[in-house]
Length: 460
View 1 (cartoon, rainbow, N blue to C red):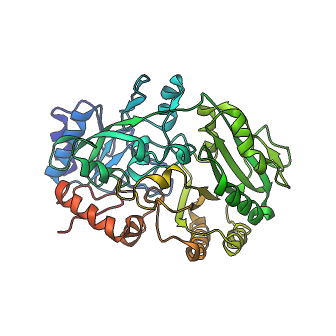
View 2 (cartoon, helix red, strand yellow; view 1 turned 45 degrees about the vertical axis):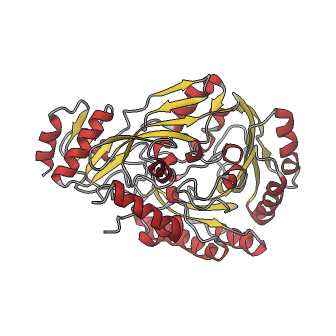
View 3 (cartoon, one colour; view 1 turned 45 degrees about the horizontal axis):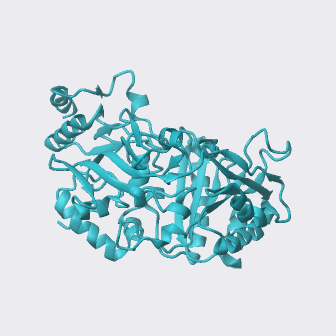
């Protein structure tokens, strides 16, 4: 079947076709999560929308499950499946900026580093992920949060329109004016409704320098530090975003020599307003007792966006569990500290993002993203090198996640889901919105062609 599909694709396909046995096959099928090892029947590296359209038609005609790769950074590794047709968009990565209208037009293979490089030439940006090597398309379709989100909302809130290739072989534009229900669905509903081939974003004045950096504390200070950040963010301006990282201190030259390699609590801070206001907004946190290192300073936004890239490159084995939290009381912070003390890998970390602000002000029915009111997002990110260690690291991750479910607001963030089953996908959207998305699936993909994802199956 793969050979026949390849022959059909070669008639008119302008990109590169890669099949098992080709020298570049193993590199082309690899994704960010090194625990994923799947073998597609065919890889189609697309050069533009016509290539994507042809690939979708061939996948449908020959019964090959299509998967879509943009940045390939999903922890679930759903950019690839055994025996499928991998539609690789990684070569479609152009970014064009209209500074007068504050709009960026981008292709789905671009990463946030590439997107930010172009928009920051004009001191503009849109909310992206916390790691610059992630792809813009997957981030956007699942919601997307980062350093700018309390000020300007989620990534999907800043999407103005998108071009999609649909399951029945059409090229459509989804926006507030064209196919508005589809537009609502793709903003948080993932890749369930088609292959996105271009995206247009609203931009905001940012930088080119922002006040940002990290505060380092001893590991045993975790409960006190988390409570202090929680209390401060309740009254802080929306321009300030904070995330707590419980893990191993990185090997960076601006840290005291004794810190790298030790367990620490890191508080990442970024303020997108004027420097004098930013200093005032951060001052109470920087004055907390027990600060071991303070790296806060004015930096280019593009530099800050790469800060968390270290230690998150491709190839390592990863297993994540994530949960929106409704409370961070003393019992919750003690639970986090207890499990942090038993962390099983120096590459693993506990990430706690403080949400709110503009995220919570978007209407609950405006997008498919569901958990607007959740104040915190916990992500337990296990990372290690050797397959024989899988059991211990995944058990630690599940243990912490299970313990923190007592403090959950009852939801999952679709971009942080592994392959956790339909029940967790339902939790990502809630029953009401899930039914709405199912109805949308019935319209745009009734045969569930696009099913290798965090799937919302059609009602039939």
